[in-house]
Image 1 (cartoon, rainbow, N blue to C red):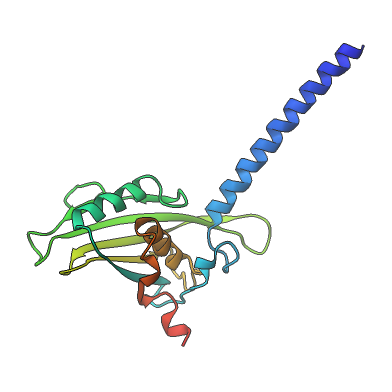
Image 2: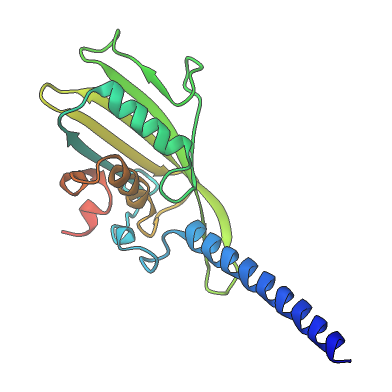
Length: 200
């Protein structure tokens, strides 16, 4: 009887450990998937936009020194191809049929790369269920501006009538810039949207 009780206890312990592990993975997945919800998950969500582009949007730019457009493109492409900082990004195929980024240097005055990605997000409404996923599109521009490489990122909410974004579009760009240039991302500039006109 003692051996049977010990065996049952071990089985119960194993089951409880598996349940706890699954619950932990689920909690991590939900935290990542939710991203921005009125700024409560990440301080980078504290830049909400309200309809600057008809829907919510945000454009940031960053100058990076000591590199080339090709090196920046390769690094940015790897970040996005791996799912980005939170695992919710994906690259798209360009108009010429190239995956990720296209070099338009032959048609523009400088060596220029243009690419596109999207970020998927779920948001919790007033109850405990989640809604979504919603997708935001990011357009990326990498160009040689002389002594620096300029990286511009523009994120826009895809869903119609998305007047507010809870800071998600700013989050979509700044978190990639952090990964791309950990030492200089803080010097990034808000170019448009990002709640600029709503927070003077």
